[in-house]
Image 1 (spheres, rainbow, N blue to C red):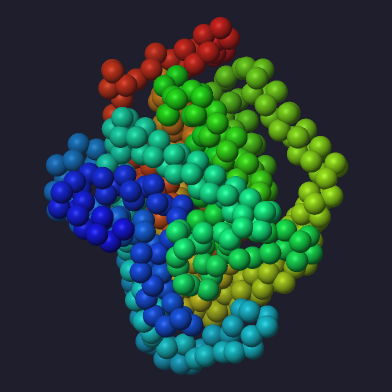
Image 2 (image 1 turned 180 degrees about the vertical axis):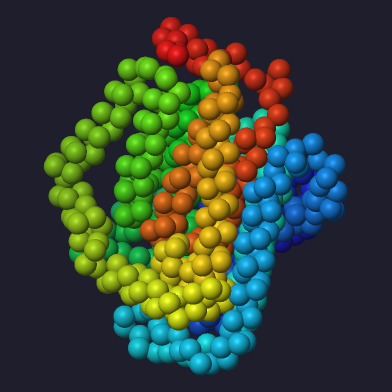
Length: 465
């Protein structure tokens, strides 16, 4: 990937963006591992292609005032920049505290602790964040045209299909006692990236992480893809083809079902609920969608009642999750982060100082009230802009309503998974969704790309409204 990336930088830089988007879910694919074997850190493939692409795009960012859609993007961009400024300001806290606060290990089996000192971790974590913010801004600028937005979503959906099928391959390798080819895509040496080795001892089942660091991160990116795939079915213009758009829904949902991730199962309920609300809001009345939802729920109930492994999995991952070791460790990390925040409520202990398995106390403990308020303002602004875009669009403009509703649902799902599973700021899919959410309200709908209306989605049923 290294020679491919640098060759494309000089010969065909337009393909760097394509590879960056495609490799977003490949969080366990490292192009290089930095550090000792005990504390290695893998550089993700998506970050390689994304960094090279941004190097090409950054000179244009300096002339952002010439961009025709910059004025409409200024508010969320300024909020992201302000959040970055708060993060940088928070880095003075470890220098000021200088060892007077002891950071306890969140691992219940590890009683270790260490005084807080400014370290290289603070720098690397800040670099991850700055990269993500720049990525979101450049993605927003690039996708201000409807044709480019469709292209970006299509690439991400194709990637999700491959990643889900690779998860099926992982399951088949375990089922037939075949060596799983981890050397292809699970190349990160980071301990937290070895999700493909996890097994649920109580149920005797293999956990599926595919090309992601762990099953929950596989679930996060595939839940976003599931939202997009479902709403893509409503578009009169297929993303891939009508057949593959439908197959994508089944393949991605199938990958989520075999992932053995609590995030996947609870998230699927949220995805279907958001999709149902989207159908109601778009006023698309079609019996096949209700039939699909009923059949899907019925299939899950049949699988649970008829198969003992499904019952064991449900009891282990849903019912017994709250009493599991991992859940208690996550709760302990949140409680410790809460205590650190109460000690330093304005700027926290500094970005990269505290690990917390949620979004709110992760921000509060590391950046204080200042960081949480600015980040919340950005999310609220992005959500309101998407809502207004769908409300102000003409009732007959299909894409002008469809994509704002789709990205609003994707943004809601993203925030939900981060609230429950931690702030995934080191993963590119989060900033990709942020970028699309910022640009959709400013989309340029040309006459050749705009569809005739929602009634053209299914002319035989029409739209009530």
